[in-house]
Structures are given as C-alpha cells and as structure tokens.
Image 1 (spheres, rainbow, N blue to C red):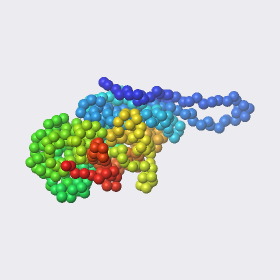
Image 2: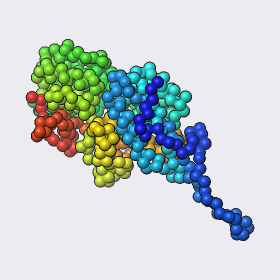
Image 3: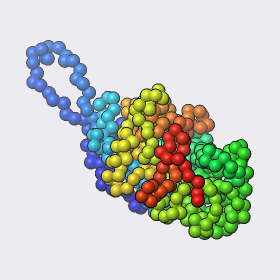
Image 4: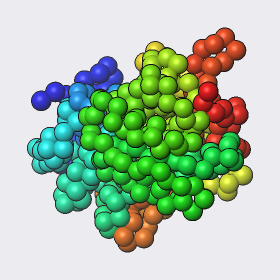
Length: 442
C-alpha cells in the first residue's frame, strides 16, 4: 500500500505518545539547585509542571489514483499545508504546557469504497491513529464514517457533503462542508436574478450519493420557484459519452442545465455540450468548475457556474467575525492563498481550503479541550462557532444530525474572460459577495 510521504509531512518527533496515545511522554528536564538550609528545613513550594511533548497521529486515505484523484490530491495538499504551519509554530500548544507534534499516516484508497473500509480499519486497529480525517467524495466519506463511528474514533470530514451520511445519529463525525442539499439552490436563485424570462430547467447528474442528494433538494426547490423541470436523469459514474443525454436536452429545449457530479465527468459534460453547440443560456455544474484546471477545456469553460465551498476572493476576516459576534481563528484568506501558491505553484481550490480547514478545526478543538481525550475534544467541537479563512463553522448538536455542518455558506464562481481574453473565475453569487456580474451563455 502506498503512503503519502511529502516533504514536511512526517515530523521529527520529540517524544512518544503518552496517556491516551498509548506511549510515554518525554518531559523537558527541569533545572535543580543545590539544597540550602531553608530547603532542608521545610518543603519547597511546588514547581511548575514540566513541559511535555507528545506525538499526535492523524490518519486518512486519499485518492492518489482513481476517479477522485484531482480533487482528493488538492484536499491532501491543503491538509499538508496546515501541517507545515503547525510545524513552524512549534506544534499545538495545550493549556497545561503540553505540546502536540502531529504526524500523518495515510494510504491510497484508489477511489474505491472497499479499500476505504479496509484502510480505515487498519488505521484504527494497526496504526493506532489518534484522530481521523475523511477521504474525498461523499461515497468514500460515508464508508469511512461508518468505520470510524463503529470504532468510536473522532473523524472530521472534508470532501463529503451528502446529507444522508450526517443524518444517522453519529456521535463522532463532524462535517466541514456545506451539506449537498444547499449546493444548487443558490444557482437557481442566481438564474432567477440573471434571467427572469427563464422557465425550463434540465437536470442531468451523476448517480452517486452526493450528486443525488444535491438534485433531490434542487429539483423541488426549482419547482417551488416556478420553473418547469423538463428533464431529470442520472448517468453512471465514470460516464464519458454524454451524447444520449445531450440529444434529450436539445429535444427538451431548456433555458438552463444544472447537475453534473465530479471533476472528470463534469469537465467532459461541459466540453461535449460546447462541442455540440447546445443552445442553453445557463449552465451550473457540481465540483468541476471551481477547480482551476477546469480552464484547460478552453472556451467550453466560459460562462459555466459552479457551487463552491470557498474561493480566493472571499473576504472572511476578524472584522467580519466581530460584526457577526463570533471569534475569528487561524490564518487569513490572503496568507492561506499566498502560502499555498508558493508551495504548490498553483492557486488553491475549495478542495484545498477544505483540507486545511479540517486540520484547523481539529487543532482548535484540541486547544479548547486542553487535552487529546476524545470526549473532551468532542465537547469542544460541539461548542464550536467561529469564523475562519474558510468561512463560518458550526456543527449540529441535535441527536439525529449530530456533527452536520449548519453555518458554512456556499459561493458561486463563474468562468469569464478578462480584458486580456484570459479565462478567470469571478464570484457572481450571492450578490453581497460578488466580484463581478454574472453572464449568460452566448
């Protein structure tokens, strides 16, 4: 099995795991002085606790290969950048003087559910990890969540937005992403503002847990807004020929198309719609458009809208947190974007930001708990309500939906050409966050 061993990921450890980590803590020796008459006559005052360093093992799988590898690798890059920042800061500092030194244990899940099940079991039982991060994509997250919950391990999920996963009464799973049910509702609102004459919508989506969750919420929402859904069909994961669906779309003559699935299928679908010259005024697809590499399909990318968990143009800040009456925690939007670009020579996507945010939430929970004890960390996560570079984070504490994300909001970028004719993304919805006006397809 392959492990991720990028530079700076596995840290040099100053001590072994202690207490709940199953090892021995290494205290920093305290200085001693020669005894004096006073010290031999009466007990000295208690010395301050010695500083202790502990290893913290974080486990996860990534799709280094397989259908989910593009977005999954971005997520891993974000998590590794968080690890770099923690390393530079000297570790995670707890209130009692303990310093936690995180290291990562990871395997390639090959985008396969059976490997996720086996590897998360291995991470828990053989590798003895302390905390878990999820794999990328809702289907894989669902499998990892079940294994984590059955073994009583806390897992923070990125790359998993499926509502159903977070509606099973889990006690140990915490979701960073906005749930899937909210992914395309904003796109429908944008369509109404951009083109009030639009009346007909076609929905074409991948038949996986995440995409089905999205359209299951989007279709009734569109109907409630007065739209007629003239086509609603799914395609199998891994589909590469969309001609049958495109023929049905042309016959139905919709004003807008919404749907898609993940990066590879979404990119291929957008490209084939362009090549077939499908005359539709609005196109919103899942996952693919927010990825910087979506631009590689050239003019086929222009005017495509995609729901995004995060974009470089967002303006989350300490001032915004103050206005909202909640604390701000962690790195700034500017510093995250600058540091990521410097490390990976490419702009971060929302998958990158989600990876960093999972590490950041675990760090904050550990600091607030003042301990690596899972029950204390869960209590800290339950109380969490804060603003970060990634946006607002708060988890449901209701029994059925425990750990489901309830505060993070989506933004909607659109690919447009700038004055120099280069494809760039602009935030076009919500209006209060826009960096440019939305445009209809031509």
